[in-house]
Length: 228
Image 1 (spheres, rainbow, N blue to C red):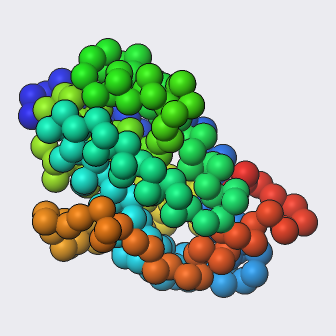
Image 2: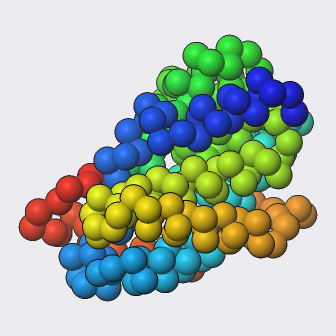
């Protein structure tokens, strides 16, 4: 991976990437309202569960497989991963939010990577014949740029983790310094994650029941800072 590809990955995984993700908490706000998360300790514990039970085996594995198929120029394979992932998003608000973020991410990426699977994927999504999530969009763009599969997957994991920590800093609330300490702990989770090689689409899963129920219940909150 050359320096330009590395810098590109830093750009698209930055919190300022214009896909609207900052306005979503994906169930975090519900857990705060219910009192399950009330300080840095409870936030990090819940984040640990979310990372290992939902982010890694769901978005992380989906990105890993999508990269593999994009690298092989298997357009139908990429669309299959996206279809299964999008159909598996059970909570109404989180599903709508993930698809909006994914479509916007892919739109921006198609303007930055004007070739290959990224462009072809965007044509399908913009025509309304396919769906996208941020993780799959990033993985496809990374494959087009020759970014290594493992690096691309780790970048997807870090980007999602960083985004939820940013939401926690605002909503729990916790200070910026504590947020960085939690994010540093999260980097350890990413580094220690088991290898995803050899996994199949059927292995994409989520077992974070607390988070998924919170995502479903978010729409019933009386007051909301986030869209999901």
